[in-house]
Image 1 (cartoon, rainbow, N blue to C red):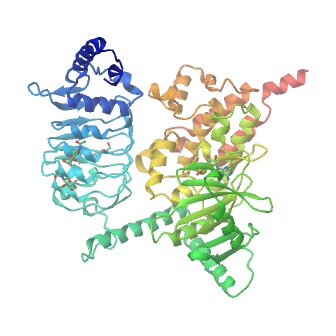
Image 2: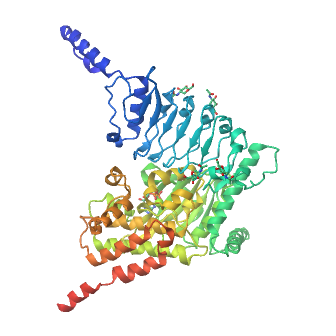
Image 3: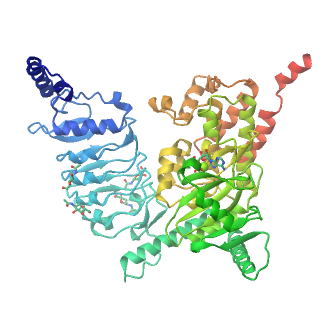
Amino acid sequence: MGVCLMKWQWPWLLYVLLICHVINRNEAISPDGEALLNFRTAVSPNSDLLPWRPEDPDPCKWKGVKCDPKTKRVTNLFLDHLKLSGSISADLGKLEHLRILALNNNNLYGTIPSELGNCTELQEIYLHSNYLSGVIPSEIGNLSQLQNLDISSNSLSGSIPPSLGKLYSLKNFNASFNFLVGPIPLDGVLANYNESSFLGNLGLCGVQISSTCKNDGSPKSNSQSSISDLNGKRKDSGRLLISASATVGALLLVALMCFWGCFLYKKFGKNHRESLAMDVCGGASIVMFHGDLPYSSKDIIKKLETLNEEHIIGCGGFGKVYRLAMDDGNVFALKRIVKLNDGFDRFFERELEILGSIKHRYLLNLRGYCNSPSSKLLIYDYLPGGCLDEALHERSEQLDWDSRLNIILGAAKGLAYLHHDCSPRIIHRDIKSSNILLDGNLDARVSDFGLAKLLEDEESHITTIVAGTFGYLAPEYMQSGRATEKTDVYSFGVLVLEVLSGKRPTDASFIEKGLNIVGWLNHLITENRARDLVDQQCEGVRVESLDALLSVAIQCVSSSPEDRPTMHRVVQLIESEVMTPCPSDFYDSNSE
Ligand SMILES: Nc1ncnc2c1ncn2[C@@H]1O[C@H](COP(=O)(O)OP(=O)(O)O)[C@@H](O)[C@H]1O
Ligand SMILES: *[C@@H]1O[C@H](CO)[C@@H](O)[C@H](O)[C@H]1NC(C)=O
Ligand SMILES: *[C@@H]1O[C@H](CO)[C@@H](O)[C@H](O)[C@H]1NC(C)=O
Ligand SMILES: *[C@@H]1O[C@H](CO)[C@@H](O)[C@H](O)[C@H]1NC(C)=O
Ligand SMILES: *[C@@H]1O[C@H](CO)[C@@H](O)[C@H](O)[C@H]1NC(C)=O
Ligand SMILES: [Mg+2]
């Protein structure tokens, strides 16, 4: 219309208005149809899967759509198993007469829109087997006619809303394999379901799954007891993480005593070399490891105050990263994590004490941290080479074969150290190319180890997993949320494939075919052309070491964790099979 009115001359105007009118008439689709088109927009680029025509008067003949024959209002939406990728539009809430919503077995991410609570005639909701995150909207409890609710196998977090107890028509309910936590409410119909509806949610407790909740016995203040229960859980999972080994308890105690010890030493004016805690303005304290930061807290705080947007060098799932240049010319990277929940500080400090004690050639050095009331600041070495993600996918100057091998070997050694030589052992949980940093010689440093676990209850982390990292996650980790060394090995395998191919694990070209990088590899293997995976831009590829490295990667991304090698073994294989001159090279050089 706007375009039409720009025509001035008035004999034309009438004519043009008439045409516009006709076109508008043709384009006027029913409100339900419009809501569905908005839904489709949010799940593009798979729009070719939904040949829905905006010119139609109503959506009733569209694929997957069923209407009431009289009212032409949408009643059923069957869009399962279509590889839809994107978020679920809140506009579905406008489908007032929707009875069945089947979006299961797609690649949907984002949250379940609370607006679904407006579709009061809904009888069946199938959202299982997607990557949905966020909480279960309490508005779902308004759907009094709902009989089936399957939200299993997603990444949903938070607790189960008691309002679901009002679903008096509910027959089948499945919330298995999510990251749900807290007590399962006993309200209404929720009391009727047993453990088979709640499988694989490690943080849930309740009589339905015969697991007693902490502090359950105190019916005094309900809300308080559930909050402290969550805190209890957080501590528990923290301990679980550290405590892969039997010596954990003792180690924790030692770490804690060291921490307090340092504190006391400081108080009594003794100079302690190991770590130094100081109180600074506003209750913030700066802790330095190993005398690694030869500055006074005052100097550091003064520098911190000058940091602004210009100094940002990156943003990730945990917060922003700044470049911190001291007056003496030393440069550090400062990671700012926005304040977490109260009561988290002690746990945080304990963990960081452990992370700060880990020094290794192929790990990013944590020099200290500042724990202020409003945020957590971690101070790391600054690495001039940036991250591998950029080096592979964003820089014009390509990494050659030998640099790629060198980076892979370094990353493998760093990870092997975390798994096998640290005590307590550390599972990284977030191996990906943006967490492999490069120094001036293009040597790898593994970064952010231990952070994923540290921040696992943060909602932002769940979104990182789903949006940024999901191409790296082992299938059993997606299912259970339980990280092991072998889930890291899988992610490392994906990383190797990424470095070899120069393609991101969730490159659009895979997603279009419904694959990820591992799926693509498997496809190439069945066609007996795995070597085609290698980046055409990469110079100096040696076929023998390519084959050997592919074979390592293939073992790492095996779908069953037992078939994956340990990181120690991976390092051995890379050193003996990939890096050393292989027989044919050997003969070649001999014959010359
Ligand atoms: N120590 C560092 N030295 C140089 N650059 C860094 C350093 N730490 C982080 N960066 C940059 O900041 C970006 C964001 O880091 P981070 O917050 O860990 O997010 P993510 O790992 O999810 O990308 C990284 O991709 C990297 O480019
Ligand atoms: C859902 O219902 C509420 C209140 O009835 C209304 O304000 C809102 O606009 C509705 N949302 C949609 C998407 O229809
Ligand atoms: C739907 O549920 C929400 C929260 O559970 C509630 O606040 C709201 O009033 C309900 N709306 C209707 C229309 O019942
Ligand atoms: C749990 O409930 C399902 C039905 O929802 C039933 O088939 C199953 O036998 C029950 N399992 C146990 C252990 O009670
Ligand atoms: C819930 O879904 C999981 C995973 O698909 C399945 O193993 C479990 O049996 C289902 N439970 C019920 C009650 O249907
Ligand atoms: Mg990182």
